[in-house]
Length: 145
Image 1 (tube, rainbow, N blue to C red):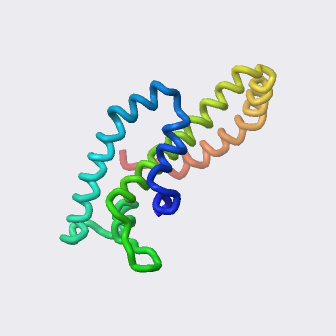
Image 2 (cartoon, helix red, strand yellow; image 1 turned 90 degrees about the vertical axis):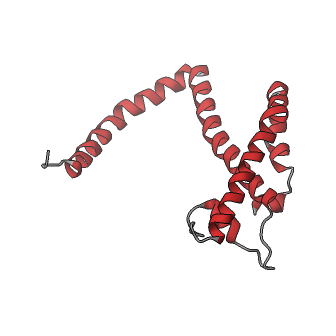
């Protein structure tokens, strides 16, 4: 639904075009066609499963995208569903990996910041972690072993 609003080229425009040239060429030459084909197969299989009532409409995001209609009663096309799934795959990966990469880069680039973070964790984090571990440990113990 999001990609139908933004347009089918949003994945290329927002993500692939921002990558280095070698990665772009690899994705465009090999990955993009293969993953779209595989996702298309999965979408068709799920559509059949929903029609045969062997899958639940609320089972997961894919089922939801297949059964949800817009305000005019229209449903997403297979291409729109595949685009939405690809957007989530890229966005979910990029968000986490970029944050971790930038954190590591900045901690390495600014040793004074690294030392401050380390001190804060050592002073403030240790006791809280120990206290939480004790609380969790007490609730998880089993006597039947």
